[in-house]
Image (cartoon, rainbow, N blue to C red; front, side, top):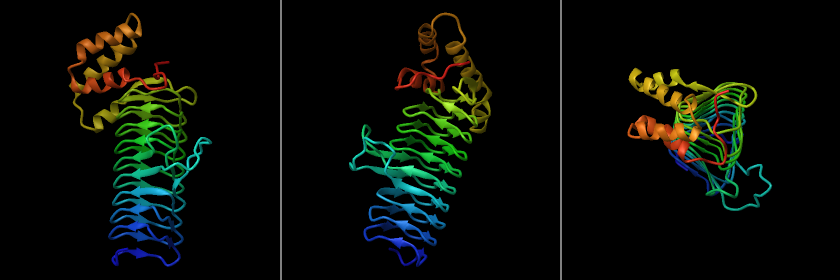
Length: 265
């Protein structure tokens, strides 16, 4: 451990733990022997990190967080598994994240610059992109995938194996049962029907009016046009497949996962 670190004497750092430079560990934390903590990270107090966890640099973790506990999966019998968290993570009180279970690649992954508000939970084998925000009391089931810049509203739940595409928005109190297209928006306490595009999110990320208008056309052609879904989607692929932004939506739909798509109500 680096002499420049500040570690409260009440905290337990087990032999083998790797602590970076400029790290602050407050009172009553417990850091397991396989844990790696990146430079300039801050654990306020009462933080538990167990099993094989890597925490990137410049993280800030608030009291009550538990990182690296085994997943709540009866199939898991202690196989090697990890939790990897990127840089600049912000985790508020009582956030929980689990290591992977079986049936995946053995890693629960969190991207860079992610924010997790009070009581947020990330289950085993989830994969989160960069700049993800989970509001208070949100929960992800196992094997959920969140793209970059996804926002999950407060008291929402995402069913296991669901994919949520980049830039999508989940409104508060929503049960998300199906895959949500990139830049899409769902809300509602039951079913999470597709409510259109996350226009405010697109504007905040700097997309032009021309680009947003094009995405609106893509959305309308896929979900609102005449004919079968397959026919409409094939037509959109042919017409917009060369557009880089439209391609994000097209590829997401083409590469189907285990869940059906969220569709307009």
